[in-house]
Amino acid sequence: MTNRRRLVRLAFSTSCLTAILWPAANAWAQSPSEALATAYQSNPRLMAERARVRSVDEGVPQALSGWRPTVVFNGSTGLQSFTNETAAGSTSDTINPTNVALTIDQPLYRGGQTVASTEAAEARVLAARSQLGDVEQGVMLDAAIAYMNVVRDQSVVELNINNEQVLGRRLEATRDRFQVGEVTRTDVAQAEARLSDASALRVAAQGDLETSRANFEQIVGFPPEKLEFPDPSFIPPLPDSGELANAVALAENPALLANQYLEQAALHDIDVAVADLLPDLSLQGQLTKAYEPNSFFDESDSAQILANLRIPLYQSGAEYSRVRELREVAVQRRREVDQTRREVIENSTSAWESLVSTRAAIEALDSSVRANEIALEGVQQEAAVGARTTLDVLDAEQEAFDARVNLVRARRDEVVASLTLLAAIGRLSAEYLRLPVDIYDPAQHYQNVREKWIGFGSE
Image (cartoon, one colour):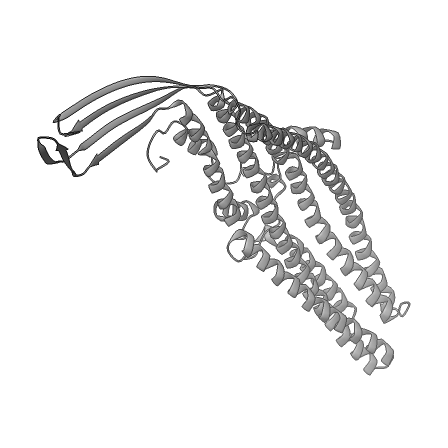
């Protein structure tokens, strides 16, 4: 019986180690970099945000169009019949008046509206890029958490299966001992109860795994296979202190940068509104040709160049109201920057403390696993000579099992805390994670459309 118990312990320990380190022995397992790369290339939320950024890019050529001329061609044709009554009698005639005109309007000065509109549009482009970075970080973090949840739940299921198998063998051994009178019926009932509990825990763990797999598929785009625990090199370098993390977050967090750019855009919007109160000057040229304009001429040509000056004197007060409105919007944007700055500091501090506490928990749980394994072996040896009861052995096995499960969960929490800290400081990007993908460059579309004068394509 002693040899059998040793074999059971060895099999259980080996299985638990395999459950925790399983991916290291399976080269075909999917890595976290591959999963995050797939999410980066196909996640619908990220794709939609990229399209939104491209739409915001169009605000710049729209603003720059204020410098450009407008060219309009007008034409008309028809029939005209008339009758003239005079003392000598009446005359009638029918003509076919046809007119064509080409008009060119070139703005010269618009009260600074074009400059302000362009600066506001460019600030919104930068804000949209920062918001894209924030969405990218959110997708990367969601995908990483989904990945780590599957890894954790895979390991927990393996541990539960092994625990259930060990308890099953424990029950068989207890029944054998009961048959020869070494233990009582109570010992058998205790072993049966622990096996039932283990079966219930295994079923619950399998349910958690299926839920995590479904969440992974929703974010990444395909169901997971057997996932591997991340290699330490997967996580980029982290700040060395909470203070340094906060400093990096204030400089690089995309949500904060986006709000700062939106504040700049709001200030430029005020200048755009003020321009409606200022004079504007434009130059207009027109060429006109008329065929049969009346009964006296067969053709008529004209050409003119006009300088048009518009000076608004009073416009019912709407423009002044618009300026006051936009000033309050700028104040709102400033307060939003302040609020976001506080949230960034809070998130960075929270993520740092979570990482520190998780690392400390892993050290404690490592010690707990080793101590529980030693205690389990001692209890089993003492039970073999009658110094311990079956319940003592079952309790020791349960404590060892709980310690292993807690260690698996803590290791998952450490990876998630590390990535959450990267997101808080603004560095959870495909580029910083060195994912095997072509990095999306929003500036390429912007450069393609910025100076376009005509055409629907963005190439």
